[in-house]
Length: 498
Ligand code: ADP
Image 1 (cartoon, protein in one colour):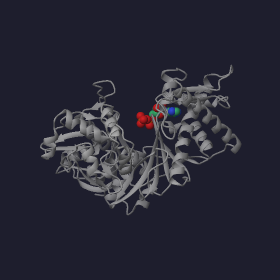
Image 2: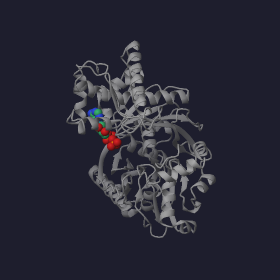
Image 3: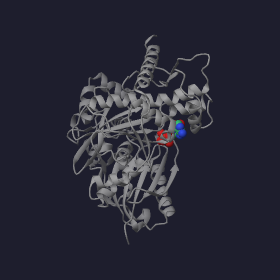
């Protein structure tokens, strides 16, 4: 029987999804299951690894059932995942020793403070491309080894550490390979992006025994066969890839300079910067784009904390709209924001401002300012923040992308996308398949399994649906951006004066 389909497992923070694709990149079917979030203390977030595993297997079975295909028609399975989330399990039997510590969890903030106080910031940055933070896996693993008193067992090789890709691969692939890919390894704060090895000095800093770590493999590579218990057929599992990296590949950003922005709760922008590891001057992260045939491709990564979340705030706190989609007609109901600017620095401002104390600011209101102006200013703020990121990236990378490729929930907003094109003075390309994370994992798996002969062929799975061309006059853009800069100064000023 013909192997006509590729399946992506997309293990996210709130749900596990599975998507069946054709080799041309069209979706045949999908299924998703949510699972429980655990908040044992303020600032702590955990998942039950058994929930992750069972929802992932069930959604895979449901998607294949819905597609009405036989498992023997599946050429490959790819796995993409929430990044940095940390799991430790017993090599004998696979039982997790603790719940997964989720990327959002702040429990190791004091571990990170100690690393910084000991003067390790520059070394960590130079080796990993990351700014030391509790977000990354290293200190989460250190916490587990400390608090559960497991370092000796880890040293004896009785335990396996992994991010979610690694945990799924161990459980779903025949023979229990203990592996992770370079994109996921790159988010642990233990992996040297230049040497592509676990780094001895970083392991010492966080007191991590090497025996506990997975083998780091290429992003597209057959790591083994799906256990027959899962679908009843042995299918190659052929990619492991962190979600943002998968989206970059799914957006076919395969050449240097190509950039994607995901407009979700926050916005995640990644720019492909090619085969040379570089640090950003603007405080952006350097991360793996992917590693293929042993050759790394790097990316700059920046995020906007309040993206679609700004629209949730309009809906849930300000009660200015009933649904997120209502923001579009409301913004269009006024010709401009009336010189009103919202800086949604509710949790501080990230790159390129890096001010954790900045706070939300609404400036420029007059007696005539109405709800529609504020809604419009909120949507515009997502575009301004993304434009700031792109400018910083372009400066650091020494290039500007030919266009910005977009996805994520808020990319459905046509007003926002047009304003984004106007403010960046760059075409915005929204693809037909917005499930770029799943698509990226599927394309990478197809590449490893020989469905595609080369990387360029995978890019044929990307099709543009809507193009937003910049239309704003240059002097209007300059005036608008200058107003945004002044508004940001007001937000920073509020933070500065105690
Ligand atoms: P996540 O993966 O972070 O949960 P999604 O990609 O599902 O995010 O996008 C959801 C976000 O997009 C929400 O914050 C929501 O407010 C925003 N959003 C959804 N639809 C629209 C829209 N039409 N206009 C503006 N924002 C939207």
